[in-house]
Figure 1 (tube, rainbow, N blue to C red):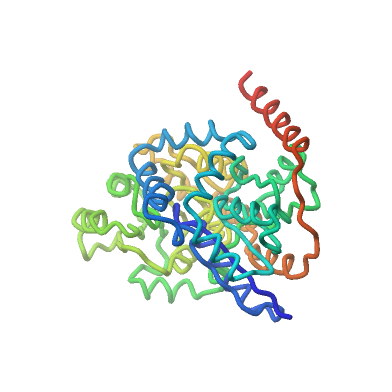
Figure 2 (figure 1 turned 45 degrees about the vertical axis):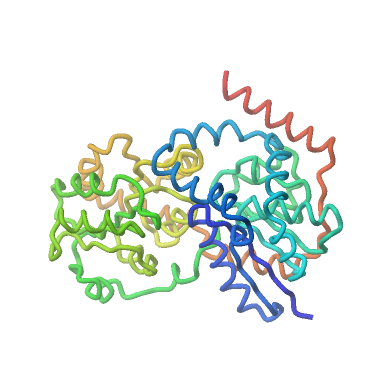
Length: 398
């Protein structure tokens, strides 16, 4: 019998959804898989709950990123918010629970901790007989991803697996897969022809400035700084779904500028990453995985405190990125890299070396063949995980 697969993400940000979409494509091609359904868990909740999870997060990213960083640190303690979070989820996700049970999947894959918590609870109460895997969509692991019942975790890097093992999770239940990205990011293209297609010079250094899908961040100020570059570079500016930002940038640089090509939201980021020589923007988990797969060195600006700062640490340590702590230094940083083609090439090679472009395939093949039973973290084991995390946190504060 072919397997039914349910992939659940949430639209709190866009990375969780993009990871789910990437997994859907690969699952659909597997001969042992029948029906595949990817859905946003927030679709089944009431408006107040959706706004809490999605709109509030997006607003905080724009207006109060420091608060997000504070909350990230405060909540990064095993099971600290578990009871309150599960209570809120269960009070507001009745239609979601009904949908999951009616679909009755063999395999469930969650790219966000909210649906993972719901499915974990259903399995624990014998209300669902399904395999639950949790795909972490950042390089580091936050305590909110912990579930008391699960089958397998998929993480981005080896260091994260080591961290989870040290907390007490069984190493055989943790797979270092990488973050799943759309296969189109590794499909070869003709760089010269594609640059011509987008109205770009075929050989000039090409920068890709991304405001993210939501179009938040200091895009206009960065464009102002890029106009001061000494190097003769051309810049692709992607403003996401923020039409006002796009219009203001076009007004700044001119609609027919040879040095700037301005886009709104685009579904062709894979093309743009593959023709660029350098990425400028925030290091979200999916963006990071996509850039690495394209061998694209990164210039990090305004990372969201918390998970994106953690991603930054790894990228800087791996030698695939530079970070502008002050945006006034953007021209200096970029000119320095463009003046040193050997360093830029080394960063490109390191990006390729750190990438895991087959992450989605690894996850799918592992899950279709997986026969492990559910693992339930006992109260004693949960307490041991809490103590291990507490010791680590205390040592950080010394």
